[in-house]
Image 1: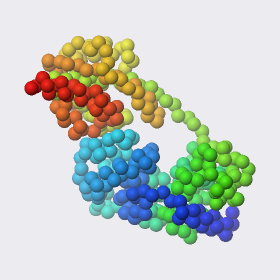
Image 2: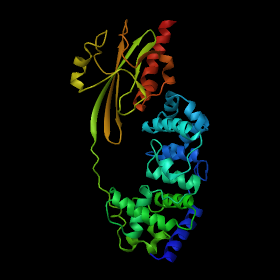
Image 3: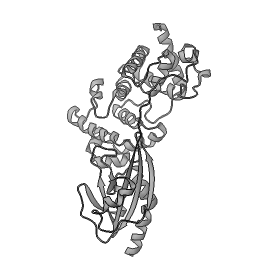
Length: 358
């Protein structure tokens, strides 16, 4: 594609963007801190879901200083329900790093931004281009789809070599234009116009120069291999209640939901749970589960079983366990399966405890 054709492509794209850009609370934002927060939230999260979380997060932590000064529990509590909690942990860790190494001022170079915990190539490019006007293409799934279809790239987009080719195309296309506007325009174009299924090719301003449209290949591009293996795990939660109190523990291992809280849990096959709890519970194991649910993560399926253990004597607390009032549970960050249980089932136990107390 000639230089004139490249300019025509980008001018057409930006004209489309002027008419069709999505409205978002962070759109047009120049504060790199707020751009950073929005980009981290949008990792693995739809815009509609992330909107309210972004607003609440910025209200609670309006500056890097405020985020760094907060406890990790506080940050996780604000993040609760959004999933992929490592994002929140990385935000907090990076805020502390910025305070220590940059005096609380968000770093202004791509290399320094890329070095922050939890920031990859795409996020660094998005912040650098939108916050500082630096010419770095932000290549996400939407961008890969548009570029592969327009230029007829039939290589696997999971491969680094293919990403490099796509990035090179974007670098040429953004030359002479505002990088942040170009990146956002290309992302919105992929999200709204050049969609994964049933793209609107009939009304596409780029159709005449699109390889996939001209050769009826929109259903075949981009090429993406899928090697995701789903693992199933069984979690058995022991909700022990005595005198309006229960035991919770913090997850500290390098596993899902690190830093969040849960009831004491045993991971094992269903038929082995009684055997596993024999030396743990001061009371007899319940005859049945009080509640169970299935929770789907990207690479894991969690089968969660909850058992209510009413006891006259609590066991000795183990490392990372604490004794809390049932009424105070909402002060702690929990994974969604725990909050669902607390809100739909355990509230009845709380009511019964209050009635007995009276």
